[in-house]
Image 1 (cartoon, rainbow, N blue to C red):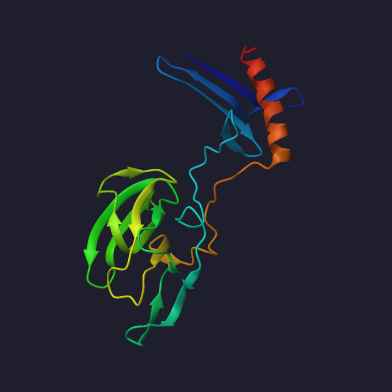
Image 2 (cartoon, helix red, strand yellow; image 1 turned 135 degrees about the vertical axis):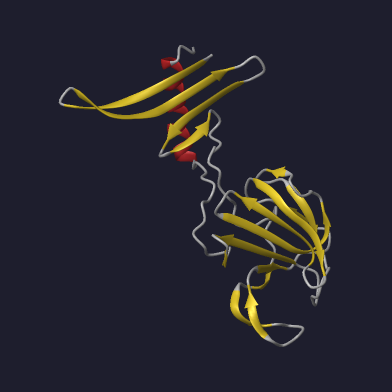
Length: 210
């Protein structure tokens, strides 16, 4: 069974054909799901965003950036001028690396220069890469979700010290993951949460919930 709260637009008493889902409830044999529209996004009844979005860095906490995204960086080992297509985080060996968004693992390999590394496809437009790992915790074809631990950082490949090299690609082109306009996971402020909780109570009453 399911229930829907739907708003419809009328002009001078005539329906324009424009409508919007304000609330949805699914009652299944095994579970119940409820979602609510608020401030242009959909959330579950506890205020968690349902948007398929990303977090800015693939780590559980912030680490010092040892090397920024730079299209004309001088390589610290070879001295050659070549693009540095990612951001390096000075992580100790064994630091947990997490998926910044939902996706499917497209590659797990061991490269002479990149070391152990993982690639995740996030739909048709976005791709992320994780280099110099000590261990991969996923396999090719595996579906992963935002926040899931996918690997441990390391010191593999041609590098001067342990770190995580993280790349973010949009339409096949590497961008600066610290500055690029990527879809970020929305979070409600305390003030918004109060308004959202009031909205949920009203929508639940409209669906016959006490």
